[in-house]
Image (cartoon, rainbow, N blue to C red):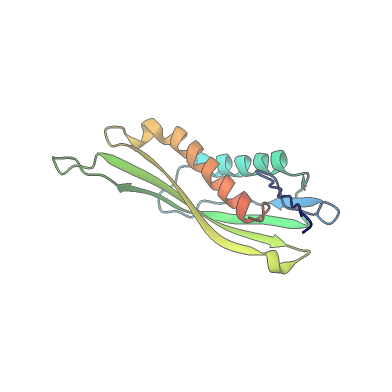
Amino acid sequence: MIPTACSISYKLNGAALDYSLYKTVYIGQFPIRAALVYAPLQSLFENSLTDYVRSNTRLQVVDGQADLDLTGEITGYTLTPQSVNENAVAAQTRLTITVRVKYTDHKDESKDVDQTFSAYYDFDSSYMLTDIQDQACEDITNQLVTLIFNATLGNW
């Protein structure tokens, strides 16, 4: 019997793109369409997504026509009580941000994605949202950007 060998390769945090085919990506605005609005969230999200794509691909981010498009909207910004303490008061509060993303592959429409992504941040209810909002939004945005990248450009 002849021994056989195989190799497995993984590419973490990198795009699964054929760079001979894909050169450019357009990242559109993600307007806030949620009932609650935290104004800095839109620019935080758009900048984080753009920076992540630039850091993890060789694609050129362009304004206008591109090989790939990432567009969407921030559809949810909600607070919900979580665990309840012995006094029947919420001990934890969850901030959840939801983003709808439309990924268009102009070279292969079978790779198009129209999906909603959510991520959350739990915090002690003794804090006001205004006390933790900046940190919470940054953490949630990082989670969302990773999820979106993996579902689109990462091709997971």
